[in-house]
Image (cartoon, rainbow, N blue to C red):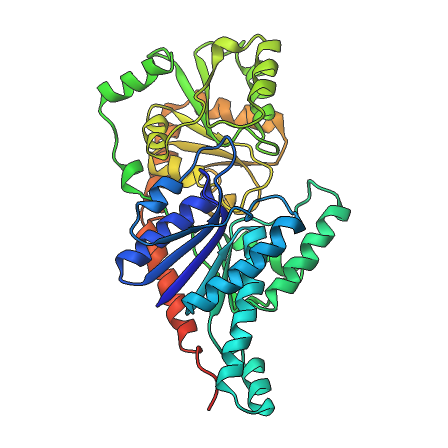
Length: 414
């Protein structure tokens, strides 16, 4: 099949890693794959170099950027229509809010022309359109939603209206968690039969493979972490709604009782200076380590060098950090938001706590700090649960089967 993937920017992020692994997997299986993306702007790092080395087509559109701007967005829409006319794809698969809307609108315009070319009469054209026939088939993955409880209804409403509009041109939705399906349907986006949950795949072997004791000791030394410290890691951009401030507040109350603790923030972002000031104001500098930007292949070893993972994001489709840590055999603590409960099973693979509840966060950390057997039991159970379900090959299998079911509908009715 000819398959086009569209995403706003190939930075270091869950949606981008998902898209990259999907493109690589489909290309290896013999499909003709083209990735369309914008410039990888931002402090988060980029995956564009790996994408360009993947052997499939990569088209970078300078105007395809995260912020809404009609000056950029309208030309991108017309460029996408032109590209679709040249490639004539069987599948258009979109990711993220901006690229998802522009890509689906452009795909729908291309399909209308395809149906018109196959249907000589107005009656047949209307019948084909009503049946949803024609090329390309349009699929959208919901990694997260642009609307959420932490912004005003006034801002949420336009996003919901636009998503409802794009849903009319969507043949199938992939959601990375059932929670995303439920939230989208509650907002009137699509119909339940259109949705398929496919967990966002990982290169699981990079997390299952445990480094040697020497390598782990070297990693700890590299971040000035004492060998006898108990390390509580967080993998997230230093950004709004990622919840680092709750972790710092919990540390302020835990350190007087547990001098051995080190909190390790893995990632970078625009809030780094602000978070460092909060840490210093609480006189906790000796108990925090901020890695800054790290390569994706370094995340696994850093998690293996840690003892616990906590994730305090307030909005997330399904945070990749949770299965990543569990694959490393680490117990996890997460705010109970979005898809977290689909991988963090309370008291079995970790602890789920109410969002923004610092006392509950302190209590959950203290349980794991005081009981290394509990940490091992939860971590081992999580590893077995995630070993298969989050493998990227299984993700590509499921996506390919969805494409095949859609490809059967490419032609108009006879």
